Image (cartoon, rainbow, N blue to C red; front, side):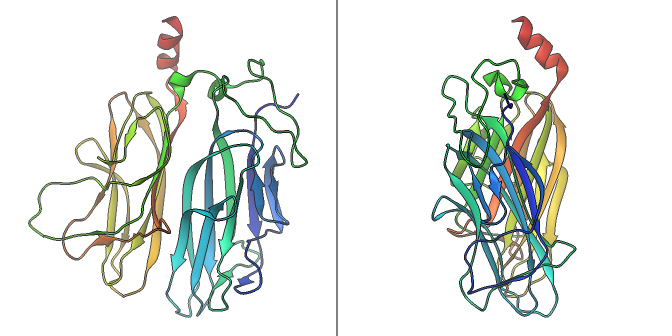
Length: 318
């Protein structure tokens, strides 16, 4: 019996002009654990209910606009990549989000059906699409599907489960987005406010507060964090991933003050202890801003990769 694996990574080696097809398809499949992704249709079809992390990178075609949406099922936009710069140069943009899926849900990349838009790639593979199951649903409510895209699943309690599939107390993951912009206002503003969010894709363990914009670690271990922010017209971007009261861990920065909208992404892993706080800080003076709208340019995701062994041992003894 196969275990509960679902992961894919695919690339496209040719450009794609807007106006001909809606879904981004792929010509090279690097990984397809579980067989849930079809590169010919560009569609991932969920077989195992749970929380999945998706990441996409696309190339901007010279003198063309860029607009690619991460879509769930027929038309539920989860996040997007956008660049309205029509310069000659090529550029790569990325986006990511974690999404809760049920069996038969689909996830795919939508490109604008308009000849003003295009995606650029070549044999170096500017265009990539990856996704994998981070946490399946709890064994008490697990959804299963055996379809033409993949084999059957393990029954709950099978010895093939890994630590991800068993104890609820070891699960910690969040993915959020903003649907509105944030404009810096004053050079004299001394308080460092966290970037807040109004869309919650997943919040496993309830460790992220979207109203305060803060993640508080409850399960010590190694965490992965990724964030993408949109550049507001005629404003610069400066967004930092913060730990505690003000320890900068990583940042995105773009001092271009042009009227064009585009995006910047960043990601890293951190070792966290119980009680550590992670948040995003956007420079708050009038020269800076974060852009977003209903297309969800601005996203923030984090999840536990490995818990600390001493925490595992302590919890197993209780």
